[in-house]
Image 1: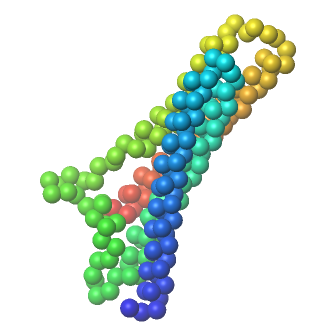
Image 2 (image 1 turned 90 degrees about the vertical axis):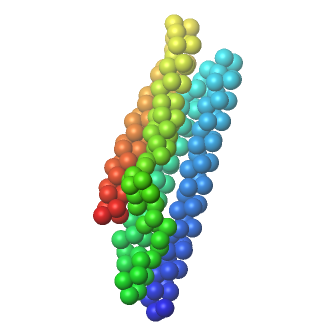
Image 3 (image 1 turned 135 degrees about the horizontal axis):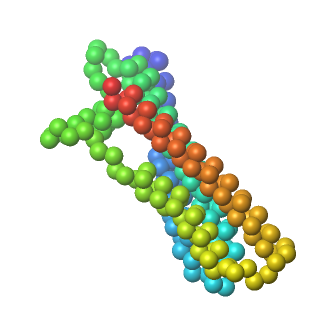
Length: 186
């Protein structure tokens, strides 16, 4: 193996390790979101404002989840488009697992999407409007005017802004995922 191939192989190992770390962070963000939403729904009768806080947190976690997704797919593209050709010698394919994942199965079916991204969009994206709706339904009609009401309206506006920001991040990640998958499959 040539010196540049040793360096490329080490770079591949580091990228794969980083991808695994980010996949682990995906799982943690998902678990934390589910736990936080469950806790919020449990204690909201006593502390209704917790629903707004958890809504904001769920949207923030969705931004982080999408950011990790972007890195994972950029790294996958780099591995397939740059490192694999440089590591190939004498026309022999390398990094077989990455290419195997994109090949049709024994029945000729193309690798199927798992639906995980859609499930995460439902969890992260759907949780926020549900929690905010439950909050405002439980608070209607407003019992007090003044600062508490204005503070809650402001908090709701902050949650909605974060939620819209998270949707934009998730859409970018989805487009990137689609484009990278298409580029690598060719």
